[in-house]
Image (cartoon, rainbow, N blue to C red; front, side, top):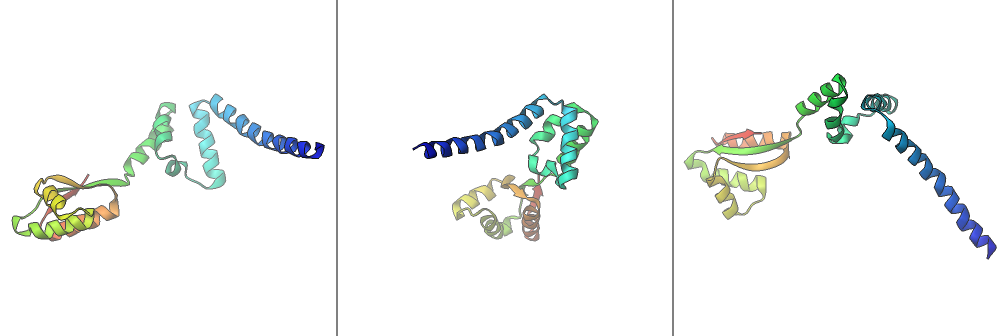
Length: 152
């Protein structure tokens, strides 16, 4: 029975140092100023050849402008790089209503009744939070029919 107990004890001891290393790093991070944290991010980006702004989802960038000018520049760059757009149907020619309905159904996956209600309520959003390329292609399709659509 004694060997079984020592194995369990060994596995617990092996797990403890890993957690203490993580705890140590977290304690150090908690005690850093924003300026020190920004310097750490730059060092990590350079050392590991990564871009922290892409992985952060913008949450970290929102906190950084209070730290200084460098954070403000990074926040402005993140604001310029909008990745999700809303496609809004402004208007369409009455004689192209059926063709516009077909395109709206194709873009949204809506049924005939829902697509008709949406098109008739123009100006209205057709797609929300879609990638830029997808929205631009949809605008092109709608404009070929004479409809007016914009990205927001």
